[in-house]
Image (cartoon, rainbow, N blue to C red; front, side):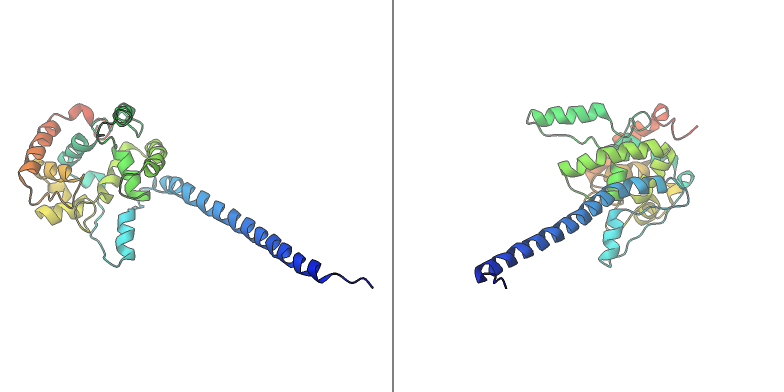
Length: 248
């Protein structure tokens, strides 16, 4: 009968455990990779799903408010139930080239990159498609990771959705105050009217408050916000050639 030395027995056990540990790590690694790939692909699947008109998407901020039990105010309205002056004002304030780009304004983006490489302060270059996919699938705050994810999502959404559907979704998920989402809730909260009844001045005030709605109160505008609104009001009144993709 062979006798196995005690030292050998003790040496075999760590090797066996290490082998088992490696197998466990490999198994979990595959699962982690699958989860990450699934999370990356999920927004693209939702973009296709949101092509269906009756579906009313919610934003990540709305989901956050639900998880934190805060609740929120959002009343979905169809594109045709939104005052054209509001659509014009938002386009002139947020994305004047909305009808002609493919989701990303590459000219503006190139200028931002050049400014960053030269060490200068950068200006915003987010288009309405970029803001829409950020609201639906990503998070707030400046981040190269978020921007890298945002660009292909914006291009995909612009390719799949019509411009009218894009604008409809954007105006129904945009934040206009603490717990206030979508143009219908915003119009009623700030001015006591429906989205269809907004005046040109009210529309301009709502449009210029979009970049920072928690500090820019459209219903109680300061002097600076009023000046910006006057500028957008003038631009919106001359925006006929820029909105041909939305109105016949």
